[in-house]
Length: 158
Image 1 (cartoon, rainbow, N blue to C red):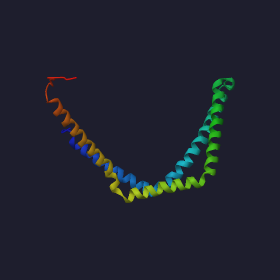
Image 2: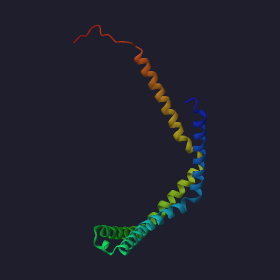
Image 3: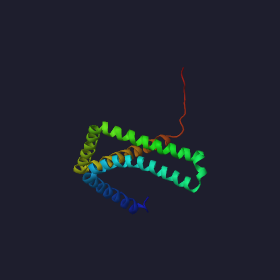
Image 4: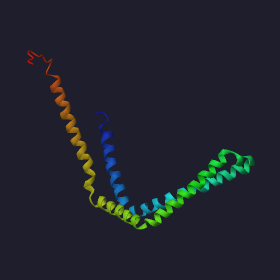
């Protein structure tokens, strides 16, 4: 531990700086990143369906007998399942659009709070040091108990 102290201190400092940068980035971009994640989930479902259909079409083009194999059936099944999942996702997003807007507003507000209240970063560090103190106290108590020696019972009355 002593030999690696500078590496540990440097890693702790880099973690703190990286956390500050991440919090500032989330303050600037939380709203857009939230909407981007909603759109990317839909795009991933549609894209995987299209990719699977393209993969199946290319395999059938190379070998026309592939269409009768179970692999082609499973690719077809997956593509339609992805399209159905995308449709259900889109319907849920349309039906719950107001709730989605509220959730994204909460995310944006939380990002603003963390950007304005940087001392919140030190809460985990505080509990880490409290945990270390409890561990040191526990080790001290175990050392005291184990240094008592052998316990002898002189008289047992029942």
